[in-house]
Image (cartoon, rainbow, N blue to C red; front, side, top):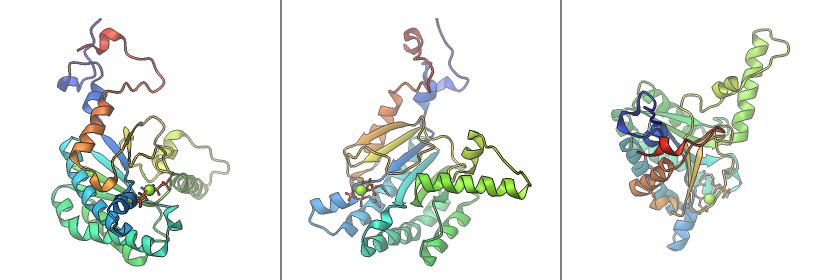
Length: 260
Ligand code: IPE
Ligand code: IPE
Ligand code: MG
């Protein structure tokens, strides 16, 4: 049996063209800054600083690979448990990244969205975040979502409360919601579905990242500390993704359909 594949399969002779041409949306848990610094006898802040360089390299590499949307985990709702000094270093990274890269991102057509709760952020960081979103709102070549003061559970709670509030405003006494309603109320609603979640540093857990969105995402765990990340590592993860069969609960493709 031969299959022609989906209509946009021209780049591939395989019925797995959806997978082969993706991923459209990659999410990244940027982990290992502290261990990178410790291995060099440096303060953790240096690891975080190098992590910003890795982020810049990776955003560029993602666009080159045809990825449309990159979501990176920068600060979790649990990271407030760290020392005041480290929290302040991590907040400073937003200043550093936006300060040094906003103009370039604007020119290159990148739209920035910050996922996560604004309340709790220092005022100047909240203002920088608002500015980055406002000044890139017209861009549509690439979507960069930075999860900052973000937790997957908190995001689901916020989405539910938003839906309940809207229902109450429109006079619905006992509303019921669908998966699509929740999808649309999450902070990630602007991006395409998450295809691939990568975690660096060797840890193999989600740490409260994209809990709802991870339902059928592929996961790749890489033994690379985040400050060492870049095009080569992202290519390797995307290569691994493209070798996977995504079945979404359905059946594996027939052997004759996957042969090229
Ligand atoms: C990732 O590096 C950055 C954030 C969590 C904000 P870590 O600081 O977690 O580094 P490790 O895991 O201690 O090596
Ligand atoms: C997850 O990393 C959060 C970010 C990368 C921002 P952590 O280093 O905070 O996660 P745990 O504590 O190892 O689970
Ligand atoms: Mg960590």
